[in-house]
Image (cartoon, rainbow, N blue to C red):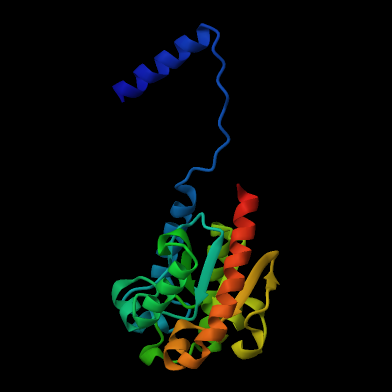
Length: 220
């Protein structure tokens, strides 16, 4: 407190000497982190669907909240439920490799899921669960403000784009959601089960890389 008074006194002295201070209009670098933390606490209290009874840890997401690129998956699995982090299992290892192949580090992007709680037995998300979790994902996107979203798999793509089409007919083509470019591709878990689709996935990722670099260059 004493130190703050000394600094304020010095600044007032400089002002009396004729120095002008330019008020900084800034977005505190912690603002988005704080909003995401508040959202995480809301999810901890959420009882909108029965998944809260069986989860161990809700999984909000992780990464750079100021990234222009957001990856959206389906739901946490067993390891994610244990650690409270997204994509930390085998599928997560593949996603990390994909991100590195783009010339990026995992911490440079933001990663989340449609569902924040693990469905028992890693079953597919149910419509009522997606409906309950949708407001959380929507608010995440509003907080992070990405310019590019990569949806991973059928459920993430259907949820975000409001379509019933499967990923095989949606992948590799840019869509739009609220002015944000969206590129659907296969979920890493699907690629682990069906490695013959990896070449198609890489074609999608190359498009994602090109658009990322394009948007990034405009940001400079």
